Image 1: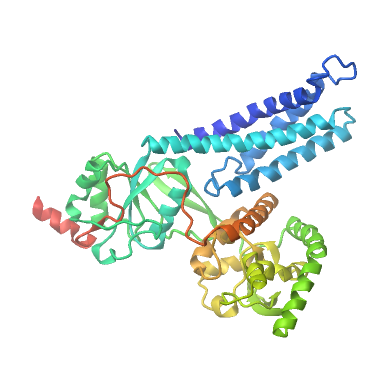
Image 2: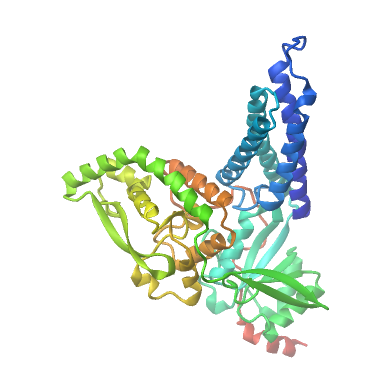
Amino acid sequence: MKTQKLRYGIVAADLCWGVGAMALSYVFRYGHTWQDPGRIPASAFLPFVVSALLFWTVLSSWLPLDGFRGGWRFSAILSQLFPAVSSLMVLLFAGAYLARLYTSRLVLGYFGILLFLGLIAIRLTARAFLASRYRAGAVRKAVIVGSGPIASEIARKIECHPEMLWEVAGFLCPAENAPNPVSPEMDATPINVRSVGIADMLRSRGIDELILAVPKPGHPEISDLVARCLNQGIAVSLVPQPYELYLSRPTLVDLDGLPLLKLEGVSAVQPTPSWKRLLDLALTTPLLIIAGPAILAAAAWLKIRKGKGFCSETRCGQFGQTFLMYRLNSGRHAVGLPIHEFLMQQSSFTELPQILNVLRGEMSLVGPRPEGPEKVRHYSDWHRQRLNVKPGITGLAQVHGLRDQNSSEDKTRYDLQYILHRSPFLDISLLLQTLSTLALRPFTHRKQRKVGLPLVHTDVVVGTVFEESLSSAHSSQSSAD
């Protein structure tokens, strides 16, 4: 099944369920009083159904509501659907009030609840369908040519997107890079194979696609491997170099068979959108009122115990300007902490004083996590792009499990994705996902996340490597011919 067809199928199911949810809501409200003369006729709810369907169609074409983005994580699906359905219900209630339509608010309330539950069920059904396709073996087996972070990231992203119906069956890399050729999530023993027989070996083991993630895909030996794979009916995909493509939106242009990757750049100087500042103030002000007493109580306890309740750390904000980031005086990664202090760190309660930084305009609720001047001093031009926006208390990288101990490269990739796609909807979604992550953190171990969908085990050993380096492949083949 094509990914686009699956997306359209989910949207179509959403729209059908919208009609069904309204019908069920009407039945729940009036099912036992059909003869009541005061009953509002069903036709009165037709404008609400039409408005809901139009709104959802437009919203689905603009925002990723199908569950694909974020890797089908349940928390991501909830955080996408909840603000979307909430916006729809606000629109319906406001429209009814402004148009002075006499209607049943209970019917609309039932409709919102049923719609939300049904949309979740549709996505879980799609996930179960994809799982059944994996169990049936209806997947394309791919082998990644390359080693290092790019190859590992490709493997992780394929695992996180089961709608692609791809399975990483192995890796190919020069023998000298064999000790660490694959992603840490995959545990298998490398096997050796001569480079001249790679295409035949891939075909014999049912490999459908070869993914090139090497710095020089035009190398004669790589070209020879690609030609042999194409002759064997194995498709070939290419990760463009440089992979990161900096802060741009790439589109593919076909110029009479010559593929061009067009980069639409984003301005380096990006003022903070007005909606973002309004959202920060609207959320942090009540948060400070609610959490303020708890923060002060925790600070008083830490002051009695350690002589100091709050501490500050120098961080680099937007455009590299330094500021003092506040937090409760509890050392990170300390051992032997009292249970109260341990729980404060596990729940990130120690970071709550940073809402003062948000109110002062030095930070935002959502954005790249700020790093110290020492780290920023060693940033490359690519890393510095994350300084184009205000740093945040949480961000896309943190939602995906990256913390202070993770490398700046890993976090920057997520931060640049956020900068390209930031919107009020994305900010709210990330905040909801952060709350979900914090709520589940005490019950989970901090391990590398794996995809929940089952993968079909094949006889291709993960970690396939060359016995010879790629530089000798061509000469070996020539002698054989």
